Image 1 (cartoon, one colour):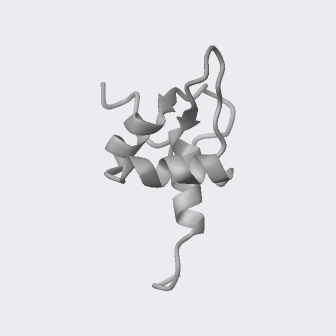
Image 2 (cartoon, rainbow, N blue to C red; image 1 turned 60 degrees about the vertical axis):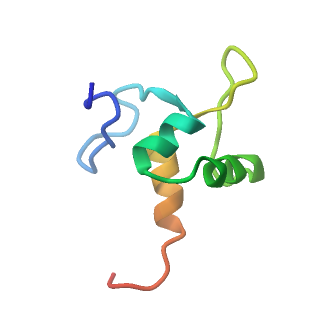
Length: 77
């Protein structure tokens, strides 16, 4: 079950394997982040979301991680 939620590695070519869509709650639980923080970022449009079959917003874990990494400030590069 852990393989489903694994963050794609840098050596993996984009678009070679479809990524599972997660609810905002599932993504928050995996990343140990607050649900409401991710929900606000999705609502602002900072994190792309998908609604394929209903009104529930789904996200890709790699896009959430990419957004978090883009917000990093300071530290060693």
